[in-house]
Length: 260
View (cartoon, rainbow, N blue to C red):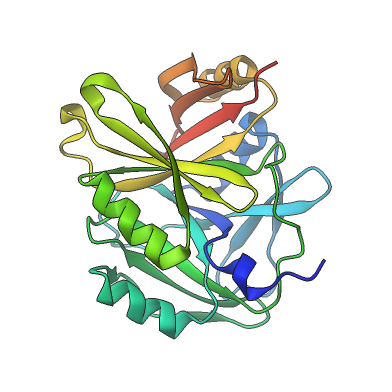
């Protein structure tokens, strides 16, 4: 399949866990999500790749640099056509640079940015077209991208202009306000909402839901392997199931299972 620049723009292409104990995190996610893990050869620092079935790479794992003053976290990499143009566009829209440009031979160029409300994400100009066609997420892949922020309508405007995402459905969440969903050409890929009062001290952030075969089995594996269940499992509109968990090192992560 030939993937054009148009399909690369705005496509979530990679996910990455930066943590304090890579060996423990590797064991945890292999058990909970069902990934296999292999070292990434040629990296200037130790880096592990998580693969779903078929040896398809979906995510990475690396040690958190010394001196970082925040907990372990998952980040997403979103495709752009030209990195410099995307950086300039983000800054024009009120976002900021969080890291210098990172250039990895044969893989591409990337940079960590924030949106105007402060949520961090990477932009990624891949060296080659993505090998996997874009479509409905497989088991082990990122299946939903959720932004918790301070101004969801403003954030939606930012990302739709930057990445070409299309706002779709809006759901009333009662006291929690509105939930704004957005699409890529193949379908819905995520949602945005304002943080509730209980999350006042938590900065705006993106959460990546990884798809698992059975939400209840995954919940039991989380608890049996030193993680915590923060919310759920619970059924969401449409019949799918989700949960919010925290791994033993303190990184928050949600999971998603299709309805039976």
